[in-house]
Length: 465
Image (cartoon, rainbow, N blue to C red; front, side, top):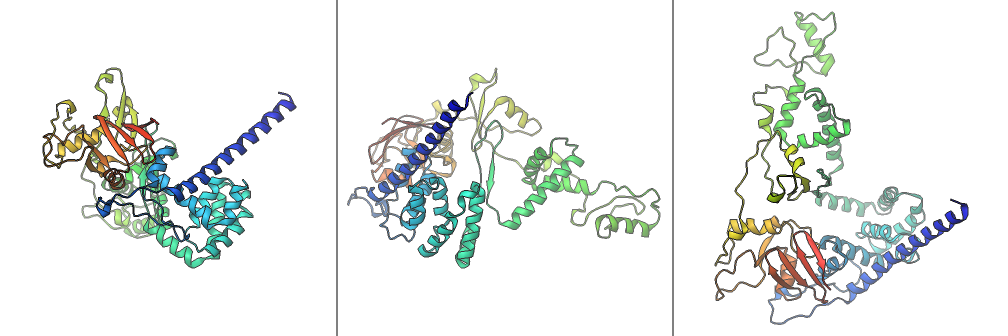
């Protein structure tokens, strides 16, 4: 390729990147405007609990925004309500709380995603302190990678406001969380917020268990693979302890001139090797070479495989695809091939629960669904059937699509008239802000307050208008 065409392509690439950054900033501008204009009509006939009470967004001097705004925005942008909420809050903080940062983003001197992240980090600071922090950070942030830039921002925040930083750290500790992402080709990403000490303890425990898997189990996988396996072993405390005990009780290798009949020599050998005198086991031969490390002392009497605690999996498989393989959808984990599922369960005892035959499941007359009906509904809808929702349905309450009435016809509680919904979505529907139809079991059609329509089936959303 000659120099001239290459230069032209490079210029076009830069222009495309600038247009993308400008479009991202436009998205934030429109979102801020929508947040300020979005209001829902109030029906005086509704119970006060169903009214839109609004929510405050920090100390920005803004009127409250609609508590249902995130439902509309999430559906519009094809993201979860949780992610939409974060985007709304960060955008409003950027626009109204950090004028220097907003100006830099508006002039494309900083990418808007970086500006939004910084706005979120500064959201708990006073306006004066936040502005000082931002001005210092803007002078240097472009010199660093994403991670490096926010590491510097954290340092500046602590330097400018140590008391606020200590309060924010306590808030983060109170908000620690753990979750597992959807599976991709048989593996999942695990994410957790730990305090710094627990994180170091976990790192050490994983490293130690990875060594044990090699020494006790003869695992010859790469270290990175063994560390991943080690975290799974640590999730099974009895099994993990048994492996550690087994590793601790392996015979030590003394020096060639070691005299096993010399008790003093044995004690010196153990102290030099382990840093502490040896504690003899109750049934130990005094002349033996068995060794034990303090708290790990003990005898293993149970087979290792019985020490793994049971886990309940909800797996959905299309029976028609079984002869030639197929897809196994594991709730809260994702999809794998049936071959991989067979490999994962190969050495595990499996107990299969009866399958609910949905076509033969009769509707109920009472208001509260039976356990069997609930299991059927969560089988149809593994996640909340709201546009782009990621909420696990087993944690949610079931709602009647067409409201249950005591004077209504029999069979109102059935697979064609129930859906698992979060409290906010339920309130928005009950208040009439969001309209819902269920044309058939497993399909929900929603109409938003602004008139946008969405068709939601199993884990999928189709924009209709």
